[in-house]
Length: 185
Image (cartoon, rainbow, N blue to C red; front, side, top):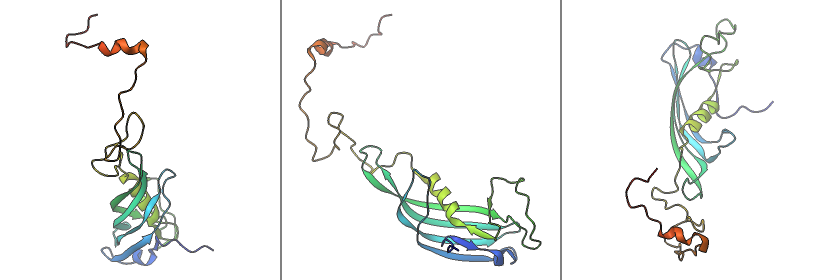
């Protein structure tokens, strides 16, 4: 039998408590699997608060981590820092008193505890991290990007290129200027 993940929390005891009962956990140096095109660049740290509700467990968490990515302008590999908040109610899959399965069809999109009344927080965290991934991460706010001539990263060490020699067959196009009038039909 494999050991449970450090982000799987048994909650059968909390489900037997009255509504409003809380459990708090610290998350330190945890790692999880993300979607195939994402990867953690740093372990997760944060805090988790689990509160008993009349229906299930309210999950409140704040985690900090970094994901591996590349700069949208210069394509360098970077670690993108993320701070993610999770606020979600997880409902039991099995009635704690009777042991009978509960109807999942009425709320198919809601987070569920396992059949052993455990919360797989890693799955919730992976979902939240993938949703928080920036569309165009930058290595620095004023990243200069790449040189259109040589493809090297622009910056203080980049050497300017001399004017490009133009194919003589296209040289006549250099003299072409639009004088501001509408182009004729």
